[in-house]
Image (cartoon, rainbow, N blue to C red; front, side, top):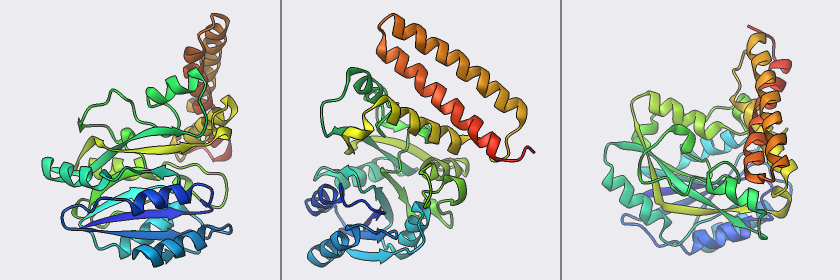
Length: 297
């Protein structure tokens, strides 16, 4: 059996689309269950989840402490499936989504992790530079369009759409702390951090383009400022936990170099190239900010 795990914290604006897609899933061989987790929401999320659970036989759990990792770990403890499939509350999956994961698990018996593909589900037409970044897998939670099925790096795996075999997961769970989605600013990274740990234990990870899904992108997420802010958070979450001053200085110099590259690209009218440089600037600045907040080792 496959267990679909959906956590949500204040996701009422996109949850109706996500839940409607889950209701339309084609059952895979062996069947599936849906495990919902309300993570201390204070909007209409809980009511939406309760209604879906009543109407579709899903199980609803509640994690009162904010933190996506906490919600995911609670669901893992209750899920009954041999294959655990994770989806976010701003993702729309097609009817054959679970069947694609089931086929991949049979086609790749040595693999324990499966990274589904993600493409933007734009709420309005995107600017060309943003569409270009998304096609390269550099923003909006998207994976590269050119990535074929087969072994891939942990960074390809997106928490909004992936699967893991229960036996491959073992006793490992999502980490909290700086990688968690807590009550403060959303940093993220719990998905790739778990993937790296599992891969280091000798478990294979494969990319599954057929298990694709659409990631809802709202208009306020389609601005240069929003993309820049997201990469600052990513940079902060990926920085060493105990950074050293030389590393922070190197990041500052790299950020200055990328900023110069962005300025040059803009002067030439190359907006996509400028955007590539700017997300590198943002990531480096996020690392520097973390270094300034943490004591040096």
